[in-house]
Length: 432
Image 1: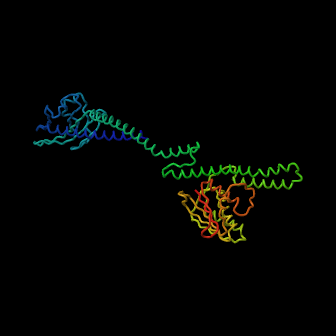
Image 2: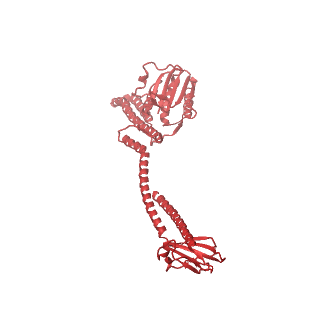
């Protein structure tokens, strides 16, 4: 594109310079005609004469490149300069008209200027003459060639400088992309965990989305690993019992059935936790207020006998990008536990862009209830990971541990203490 642009610029400038040089040549030829007029004399007899010594010496030298002719409108040659010996007399244009000039290129090698005058002497004799001055195109060609040479030299230099500047500018502008690519390679090689560099404002959104994706994928991987570990640990005891029952199967039939049922529940629970799917789909946006209303309506149906009032306070426009199953695990377990332990009132509050421990989060979901709360010193115990073979335990148990694990793997934070408003338990979930 630069080559095409500079070529067009060169053509336009060269053409403009040629026209300017031709205009300067026309003015020079006009001056030569005026000099001839100043030396010419119209006799009383009607004859036009010029002195042998002309103001311009080039008119006297054959082949000098400057030629002059004087002729009448009927193309009758009256006078020619000694320099024009051997040249054809240029024919003037038809009906030029007295006082008019006509400038043209007679051929690629010569420029002509015709000037029509009506001359009247003191004796009253009036004659019409056409003064023609011609000059070889060498003057214009030399100027144009010299201009072209300098023009192309400077355009090449400017083009090279411009390419160097553009290369440096593009390299500088694309430096943030190279930084983020290097950080991604470092993450791939295990040297980094997240994109934690100083990126330009245009790339901060991209870096944030990539970090969310990386965190989400690692959370899934960590969840699979924990689930396999829990599954293996949970199946040890039932398998040991079954191994002991193989010696007398008929006498221990009920025990075997019971252990098989327990193992089945363990497998279903762990598979549900691992969110085992045939393929992993991209995260979609979730309207959080609508999501909370759905969870609230479902829990009101489950605990219809308690007539629970669930108040939800959230911004009208609160679109978040999250795995819906993970959000159900977190919010569903916390709100379900609040319903189990509350007396009648639950309050869910959503705050955007909270700050905690010098860290900015995207979202804070706070769930308060008016129940008895958790005794002092018990909070850490109910959040510990361990054997979870029974899902029918009422109260703060397996569900809380699942929620705690998910929040930690997603880079969030879970806090619990006494509610200052409802005097029961207050859970605060900080999500990145």
